Length: 218
Image (cartoon, rainbow, N blue to C red; front, side, top):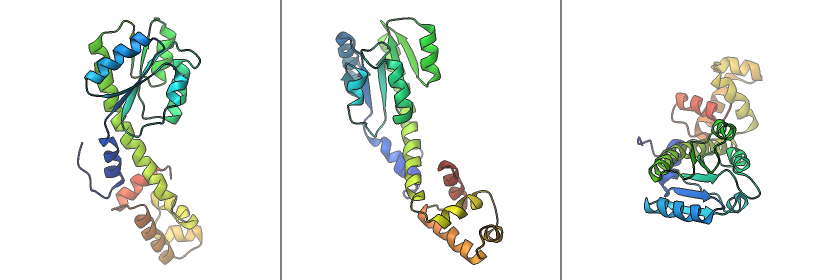
């Protein structure tokens, strides 16, 4: 990964992927769980396995990169239902589906929801390992993006109401004078708010401030 200035949000986000990657396995077939866990652990990854989707959800979320090897047919919450939950709650968790049934509709549904791979049992070990490596690489990118966004949202939360009024107008390219006219404040006051925005958002340049505005949805 490219080096970034130590005081940028992206530098902090990049450090979030420094933790070892974790591969989660959810399958109610004990023989599958044990064989997959042994294979993945042999590759140097940390592995956690679960008998059901609910058991997996009861495990505390990790903050580093990782992926989920998930069976479609599970007791209770199904694999697809768990995927729908994780899309919202753990967006940086890529999913590799494994299944004993060849159901095209299910495959399409899973892939549309963001699954990185769909393997039919019995699957080739090399194919599974290749899918895991690709999923981990994707997870690292997603962890950086989500961590960066979270950092910026925290900084945005420190802004005053008036600074939040000024921020989108700056992002839209209005001049200080024009912003002052719209908000009924002086140009000098607008300049002061602009300076506070730069300081509180920890932006090193105006271009960086604009990128931050986009990231937090301003």
